[in-house]
Image (cartoon, rainbow, N blue to C red; front, side, top):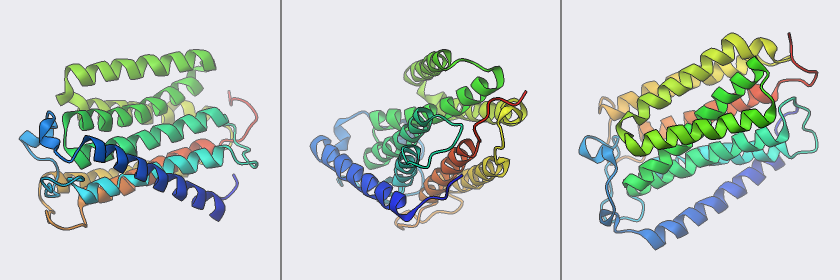
Length: 264
């Protein structure tokens, strides 16, 4: 597995910055009067620790800008997948798709925290479902040796079902994502991993540990146990950055698989 070069990192940073400018332009057209839209469901309880800046274009700046960690990670995946030295058994198209899902997580998170609207919440959770579905379908595909065409159909069907559930019953969004993620991890570690040639398991485990630490911080922030509402240092922002790190570690795990076919 080739190391990541400075040039690739720089390219991903430039692309992430360009996407940030695009999102700000969109927000400028739609806002800053976010009260004209239906509020996110969390506004009835607690939308994390960071104090909303009422009337501002970006209501929660720390939580919004930290979301670009996912965007950077996603663009870096895509840059790596299209590099000349790509030697992974993971298809370039699959790596690109995983990068796109990571970007969708980041941009969806920005839309939620910048606006605290119901439509922002929809895009936030949608990105999480896209990533979780990719991980689950990837594990199932390797374990059951599902052909690429059927795997794509399975992914689309799963995403469609989750999106429908999100529209009909948005309150179950977090539990549904947890079930999706845990299922993906169990199937990957128990059944798919033995069929991956030369994969670096430590990368996947590091991603799990990173996500667990991030979730602990998420709970401390969400429940107000560690909370400074006006600070730019927010636990939820740390959750975003650690979550982006976890996704990239998972990608690196997939990327580490060597060509050579399935292990029986």
